[in-house]
Image (tube, helix red, strand yellow):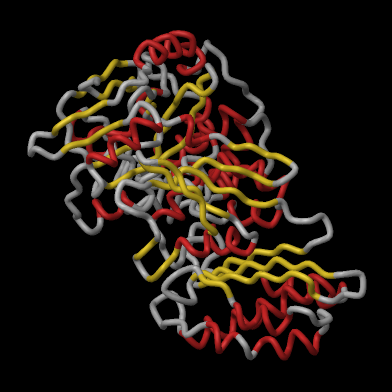
Length: 490
């Protein structure tokens, strides 16, 4: 068993044998390393002012992702390379091409958000040559600015897009071989256990078996994958967590397998890690992923974590339930698999026994002629939490009769929940406007939503009914009706 967290920060080796288990990377950078380019704007992963890059070896190759340092815990950084804005410019002060483009295009005014934008643009620049306008906007979804109006920042990305990484001016390209060798040296399959100055503990299991053993010994431990939710428990709710178990380094939990039967995803697969597979296999699910948080949140957050915390407004469970997904739970005594809808028992309560953790999810492949749709309703399109999220999965016979229908919603009850009465009103009948109109009333039997600051109960109930109408029009409506719905959504 190892007794220190080891990582590289801007080329410098870091080893920590005493660490607060919930110390954020942002606090470590600013308060302990005096790297103050990364800013705290929101402390919840929304504004992007704290954006840094975190690199990790994946299949022997070095892969970097933008993350929110304000909700990323230092305990999750073992065997990584952390890169901050201070590392980009040359030692003589010459700006990196991404930084220079921001200057040339007047992409900065007050400057508070600028380092975060630079790092998001840098992350895009490392992976995309001449990115499209849509790709640039997607990369900047998680960064907020109230000065420049974004257009100069987008122009900076366009200006620098044709320049490719070179050892002449890019530190990561210059250092790549050295960083890979050093990360290989500090990578470990050992479990790391550290006690902080106040006696609180953190554990970094070296394997899934080690995770099961750790949770058997500490069944009340807080398991942290992406920290996009747990991070806010610390920065906003000031919770004291002990012990904390970090699992983002477990490669076994980050595997995706696609077969003719369906998709198996490890619980540690991030939203962006799942995006390409879901976009190809279930396109509407892929489009949903693009609307979950910003790029930094999608790099950190995991689908398994979205399930494990049991939030009634989690975005992925409605789609997974509509697709008849199952979840596999694991503990030191073995595994068990159950339908995902049965995992959610009540508000804040899931069917997860002491010592168990979510290991994987299986999503059956929809039939080629089935209809699948997922709709996320929010106050703003990007980087917002759902007021409600609805998912539909329909199969019909040759005459148009409904032979399979599953409808699930988040934000309508204390858990993600199926609309069983609506399903019953549709099943075995032709999927016509009359059938759909009659089924709308059944929503009142399935849901009694709450009113909160995101939406009123009346709004949620009416919107759920209207989403059934929209689904019907998309399945069988005229081009004019579909265009009207598309215009209204835009």
